[in-house]
Amino acid sequence: MHTPWNEFVPLLWEGLLVTLEVAIYSAAAILLSAAGGLCRVSASPAVQWLAKIYIGLFRGIPLLVLLIWVYFALPFAGVELPKVAAAVLAIGLNYGAFGSEIVRSAIQAVPPGQREAAVALNFTPAQRMIHIILPQALVRMLPPFGNLLIELVKATSLIYFITLSDLTYQAMILRNNFLPSTAQIFGLLLVIYFLLSTVISTGVGWLERRLTEGRV
Image 1 (cartoon, rainbow, N blue to C red):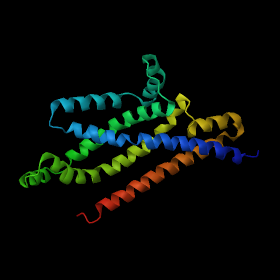
Image 2: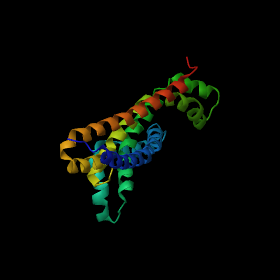
Image 3: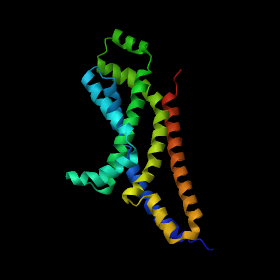
Image 4: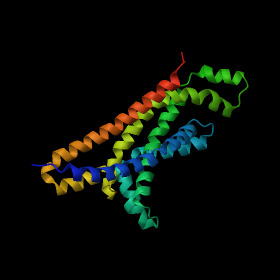
């Protein structure tokens, strides 16, 4: 049977644009990760406590449940968000919590001698963090953050459940319209997600090589 690729591609392209939009906005969770990770190593017990609550809460809630709650339950509390905003909020909070632990562990992995040397040079705590600790921690963060970004992109497939017309949603529409071509449709979907993951992996690998050039 003839496979109507000319009808597959436009719909999947539309879905890809939505997937990329949500993924790019959600990747701002990296900023949330940095804030959460820094709070986890703060000298203030109150700040550490608040960061622990955020990380524990949003790491412990399944993303699909969080998506459904943000989009379907919040309106009953008087907060109604557009679909893209609801998806970005849920994904960002969830992956920001995981990213916070990456930041915390990378900072704590910097050898104590580096901190001691900075203290001996009379650096302030802020100067120690900005000029000594974070540059070294960043290199350690890159590989796990690359994995986190790949997982984030794949997680955008769950926004199908709040009827946002992403790649998975469009693939389901095509599958309903062209049932005999189900294998081709979902095969193409697999390839697209694989290519997106490969682009991220390649980009993070290149950045890691650039940052480690000249290091012993």
